[in-house]
Length: 151
Image 1 (spheres, rainbow, N blue to C red):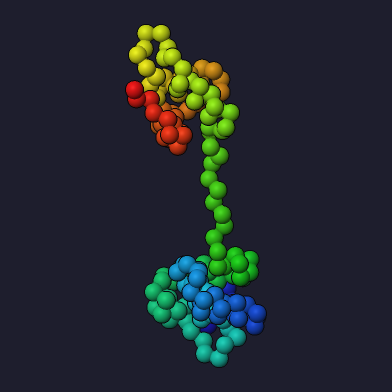
Image 2 (cartoon, one colour):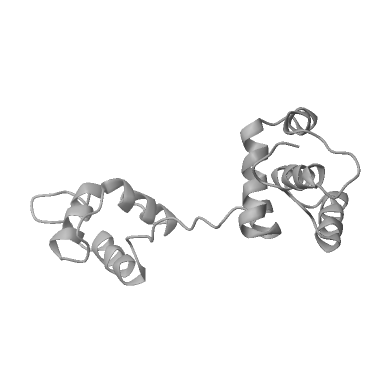
């Protein structure tokens, strides 16, 4: 096998991968990764090339290489599972949400019949509760709180 990343599974890792595949409770992506590692194992009697593994598992050659690289670089857990992607922190926290509720339920500004989403967003910035916020973000938060600006 002419590969850059050589996978040599321990008996414990091999058993864990077998159990993971046989249980059927993990995602298809995780099972494909487990099968890739099992087929890439250099400790088994029959060796498969990268092309043969890719063909058998219906995935690309770079996918096989990437899974091997992740196993060699970080172990079994790193090869099987993706890192968590938490995303950005929400701009509107509990305190700001309370102020938004107070604003939405209060009388509208002078000369306006009612609060609009843009007026609420502008007011939150004017009160220096936030540096910037869009009317869409205000709408989504009001929707989560089951508040309506209508009637």
